[in-house]
Length: 554
RNA sequence: GCCCCCGUAGCUCAACCGGACAGAGCGGCGGACUUCUAAUCCGCGGGUUGCAGGUUCGAGUCCUGCCGGGGGCGCCA
Image (cartoon, rainbow, N blue to C red; front, side, top):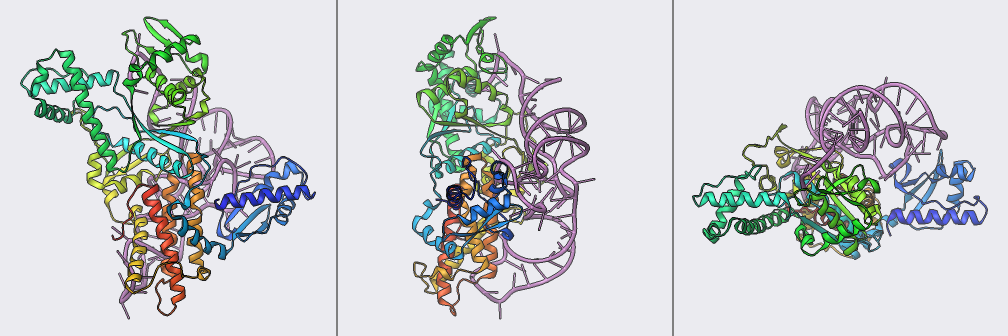
């Protein structure tokens, strides 16, 4: 159980006890929120007495006192009451130090909690059209979704990461036509690119590879058939690239879900029939419409165009039917860029139409990224159809700064990503600041082992009473709770702020407390346990949570 | 026109979903390395939280209205 959970439980018990003994009037027990506070007030605090004043019809200070007096004895924390009615907790130094043993025992599982209760959640993210390399803008989506999946797993959800492959529809058709044109052109035939085709140089590269592997065999086929074959070949190449690029960013998926499969396995028809049964489908001007307004949507939507082609929205309905009804996820998180916000109310309407509680679907919206270099915006050359790809930025700055920088802003904030700054090894770049803390610990442990110290169980943790030692440990102790907050609010940016704060506390400890001191062997042993535990936390935070590297040497 | 997001220190942003005196980093100035790595640390300044009301014990946070910026309102995705 986390620190905040433990303290909240103590307060709840005290409330119940105080009520039973008549020190407080009876009222329904509220949910207790305990949050970190400033050092001058202690370590954790709750304003519950202030909130209860009205309902209990008592002065907040008296309520606070009543709670404090009925707190069960605890070796974890002491409590005190301050005006105008806060209940503050101060962790006991011995308890704080003793938690090192818990970290040693649990290892990287130490941060795990059970708030997810094993519920099955799907995080669907990136899902960019598989028509070419991933644009750098997609990196934010990838990092957000991936980090949230990591956090949700840690707090006790059963997580599935999914990429929705838009391998049906008009964009795919254009992709195939474009590829066919490039392929034919390479073989000397004067084939025009389709209107609004994919003009990027990479299309020529795909075509070249197909020529290398298959020669001109597709030119002999009927055009339609050739386009279909090239579409499939091209799609596979794109997916292969996407997987590699995302893997280089530290992002992996459990499932790549094919849009086309929704049509091939009859899901689409089934959902259409279902909506028809409910009277939510009608025909107008040759198109098939979804009566979204009948289920709370802002306006009706076209499902099947008058051309007979289903739109993306039709697929999305079938897709979400598959997620909730067929696969039965308890909770689904779709990660979308903010320019898709207009789609949110539509999807909520879809949920109602399908008879699924709309709260089971969360749309995580995030703001856009603009790429800069030395403060100047990097212009994309639209004419050539070339874009700044994730791969290019990966090659230039590496995955660590990308991941960290894209998590330093709240989801609603825009991000200026400066290529020059990302690799700059300066104070302005927090990536190295955090990694350096890990490296410093590695250095200490290297030196200690070289000098014959053992890093293990024999250190006496009760010696760790220095304010800098305590402050560092207390910061560590907040991580499990922070992960819960991040999961509840889907706000992973708190993690990078935390990482910086943890590094700051370590650097302060480093300044104040020398670890290896032959004059004080017992203290040295204790501090070696401390820094080894903190190193584990840094590695866990950097590698398992933020998906970065934790270097031994810098 | 309607809907959504944002407006906080010179700059970039936080503020744990209504709590205590609004915090970091960067930039500016001045200091600290014969030490377990100075990619670090210490000190100094800096604010009418866009404006005006409202809700209450208490508002950067919630409500209303304005101002300013971005996004969305398609048989595109």
